[in-house]
Length: 205
Image (tube, rainbow, N blue to C red; front, top):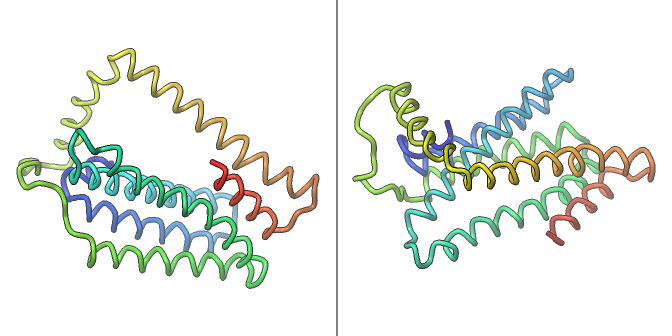
């Protein structure tokens, strides 16, 4: 869906829309009163991040050539890495000072402000010739799936996808799930210390 949005509505719309969806997810953490509410908020946050990444990386590809594509994509990935360094540290400190819900309220405002900035300040990079012909969303989705078929049939692509899935399973299970529990239960660290630990890990990465 994120790739479809970037290819039909444009890169800017994908980035701005992703920010708004992330804002909905962050606000969900403010209002969540149960585990189900937290899971739904996390689903919105993850979906929004997919739209942002799809739009930003595709925009960088639009502005690049085969000879400088890596150099054009590098700043986008560096910005992502910088956010993962600063986010846990700043978030941990804010939670320690003002609490969990006010911190997510601040995050909600930042996402919404970012979405507005994306709409106003970022130019559309998708070439006019690349815009798909008019049609239904279902039709565009079927065409996209048809393009993916040959990719999944390629053994090399499947090997790359397998490695990527294994990496994210290990990262999500180990770093994002087990490590916070270990730092809290075994070492008695607070939110600011846990955030600083994650920031240090991101800086090392």
